[in-house]
Every structure is written in C-alpha cells, then in structure tokens.
Image (cartoon, one colour):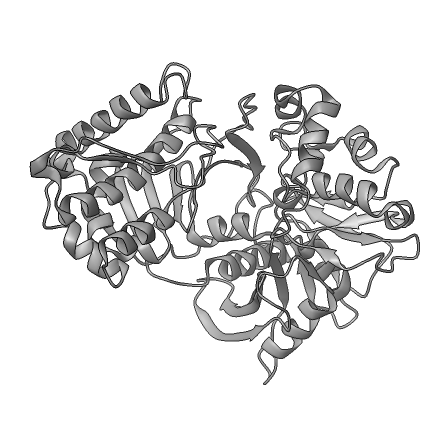
Length: 481
C-alpha cells in the first residue's frame, strides 16, 4: 500500500485529495480558494501556488509518494528567455481573443483547414487565439515571449523547482490549438501564424510518464487538464459519454481515434489514458431552466422540476428550442430560442416547465448524435452537474438519450483523476503497473436510470423536437442529427 495525492487547481480554488494507491479510497482532503476573483481573466500564477500551499497545510501531504496535477484549461502563461513571466497569465474566461480567433481561421484559409490540422477550430479561450491577441494588442510582450505553458504545465514546473525541461501531457496539449491529437505532434507553423515567431514548447508526456522527481524524492506525474482528469476520475471508458449540465452544456465520449470535424462542432481532445475525448458543446443548458423558472415565477429549479412533473412527456405539444444565447451545436450563433406548439390547452405553466427540460435534453441529445454519427459508440451516459439531481431530468433523460443514464454522487473527480494518474506513474516507476494499464480503482458511486418502457415515448418527444428544429432552422445539421 502507498499514498498518492491529486490536486485540482480550478479557476477559483485548489482541491487536494490524498488516496490509497491500490483502491483509490480517499484518506484526507484539503481545500483553499485562490486569492483572486473567480472570473478573473488575468491572474498572477503565484496565486495558484499560494492556494496550493494553503490547501496542503496541516500535514496533508505527509507520507505521499507521488502527486498528480490537474488544472484549469485554455490558459496561457507567457515566459521570457529566462523563464520569467512576461505578463499575468491569461485564463480560459478571457473572451477578448474572439476577433483573434476569427483572424486565425482566415489566416489558415478555413475552419476545415484548422479541423484537419489540430482537430479543432480556434476559439477565444484557446492558447493559440490568446497568442494572436497578444501579438496584436501587446506587441512588446509578444516579442519578449520565448516560451508558453498552460496552468497545469506551470504548476508541475514549479513543483519540480523550475528545471530546464518543461513538460505537459496529451490532454492539456490537445486544447492549445497548436498540437494535434491525431498526429501527436505540435504545429510550429500555427504558433508562428499566431505570434509571429517560434517559442519553446513543453515536451508532451505519455499518460503514465513522470514529469520528474523533487529533491525530496516526491514523484510528479505528467498531470493533465481538468476535463481529462475528471473523466479519468469518473472511470469512464469506451462506450461511455459524459454530459455536463452547466449554464452551457457539453458532451464528451471516449473514442479510439481523433475526429476531424470541418464544421467545428467537435473539438478533438486527447484523454488521460492514451485514448481520445471528442467534445461537443452547446451554448444553452441550465440557463434554459433558470430562464423558464424566472418567466414562470418559480423560486428555484427544484420547484421547476416539480412543476414539470405535473405535465406529461411531450409537454402537451409544446416544443422549446433552447437557443437563448445563440447556439454552437448546431452552429447558429445569432439564433434565438423558439417556443412552438402553442394551443389553448397547452398554455399552462406545467407544460412550459416540461418543455424546458425536454428542450434542454433534446439539444444535448443533438450533441450526442453529432458524435454517434461519426462512429462514436455510446452505451451509457454519465450526467454531471447539480441539475442532474433534479427528478424531472432523471425522469426524462434516459428515454430522450436512448440509453442508460448514470448520475454519479458528487465528488472531486478532477482531483481524483489526478491522484489516479499519480498512482499509475508511481506503479510504473516501481514496476508494479504496466505503462498501458492504469490502476483499477473503484468507479464512482452512482444512481443508475434505464429507459425501460418509456423509451418509445422519449423517442417520440425527440422526433417532435427534431421536426420543429428542422422546420425553423432547415439544414442546421445538414441531413439532420
């Protein structure tokens, strides 16, 4: 038996879990907020270290043999030739690079060209767009930039004492916009297109590789991005998809190959195990529910759920296309939401509440189908987020998704994934684990919901939604989702 730690440095806090290497059982935990605004777009990276130190107080790491680091994705830490900060780190929350992202698309020729090159189309959050923004708005800082890291790369480098060798992993690299999950190589030409000159990039490690060992003998694993760490902590594998219910939504699945999508709806991430994590985003998920609750004067989402369950599947013919903030899937950036099927008998609060839940879930089913149509096998769906606990979601999701739905108990899955990676790297270094076989930790405790006899009803709801979507937005999915 050994002890490992996993830390998750999110945009707002650091969480640390200390786990048994064999079972993954959590032995102790630590937490500390970052000393910055949660939605800050520029951060002094020292804040991440201060938070880490505070979370690890009280002997939390005593006896720990290895540490894994997960961190917020899409940040940019620009370093000069001596390894010093050029400016404050830019976080994934920073949307100032939207114009820069569009410039990059034009610069390479098309969205399809980017999808083929690196598996994704530039977005404001990505490092490649931030480099372009830096070159356009802060040319002096851009000129001094000699190396770039992301948050997890920088933290690993600091923990190791800032060695000459800087590292990252496949998962984090796949979100930069200048590394291809399909080929496993950087695209230096895209760095030059964005920044105007080449920079030093971190070495991309394999899933079970170690980034190094501290002078005290503490092994530091490769680390990864929060999304990849959470998937690893959940224990998802081939045939699994993860649907995240935030204000916006996302659907990701484990797949054996990278997917190039010329429409840009699929972002081709790599995962933390050597597989791939194609991701599809929607602009509207829980914001649809919150907007509906406000419209109906319902106090909270629990009340909206209870109201929705007074209706029946199909919401008495009401269909809500939940494109309240435009939409990414399908690509309708200037669309608005649409409520269809209004009749005298359907104009009741419970039917609108039901239509909001069904519209949100059908929109996410559209995103699932984008992956399915590309050959991604989906046999069960993990449903994450506080809204996954709502009875109206649990009642409708299995039949609308057409598959088993798993609602894991709340846990620190990104930190657990980082700890599991640390246990893997430690086992490989000790000769007790194979480089291609991660530790078999117990999966997440969860509630399981089956479509059962409601499957046909749920698919009828879905078809009603598709018919409405295709009538109002013809051709949005080409031949349809």
